[in-house]
Amino acid sequence: MIQRILKLSFLLMIAMSIGMGMSGCKSKKKLAREQAAAEYAIKVETAKKDLLSIINDEGNMSLQQKESKLQRVKDMNLNEAEILALIREAEEVIKVEKEAIRRKQEEENRKKLEASSMSLDDYFALIAGAASVDKANQKINEALKLFGSPDTPVLIIISQEGDIVDYDKPTTAKKYLDYLKDQKKNLNEIGNIEYDDNGKIKLLELIKKDY
Image (cartoon, rainbow, N blue to C red; front, side, top):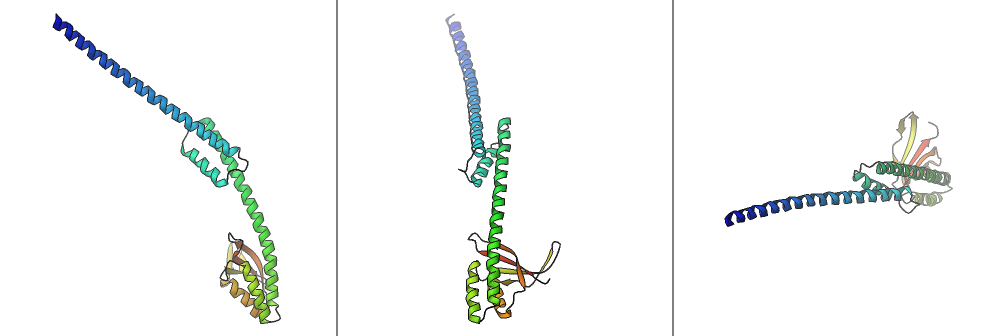
């Protein structure tokens, strides 16, 4: 009888242990699900905050910072309607800002082109019409300050038909200015000027006046 009672007690303990183990597994799974849900909610909230900071920015972030922040949100791959809508809105904000920067740069380049064109035209005329070699060399040295280096490429268009452009033999700023000094006449007009980050001419394109 005692052995039977002990045996039943042992089986009961085993059953209780199994039950507690299963309950523990269920609790761990539930805890893991709750933790994953909390982490996801944090990601969504962080993404929303970052996107709104782009959309509502009033000049505190650079364009590059906005693009980097937007890309980080995209990399989260959050399939939430609100987040996807905010992403599209942030993309539009960045697009508008890029266009504004492009227009501003074009306007600055146009002003630089006008200013430098007048200055270069003046130097071209002064060098070609110099009364002496010394005077011409003086103006050449002054004009070279407008260029990134004496070896800045100078291209001369001799003919153009549609998108097909024929250039004369490439030369450099120094060689072209010396050419003006020697020829004592300027047969080319300025077509295009490209600048480096320091505002110096990095490429000069001329157009032959009689082509």
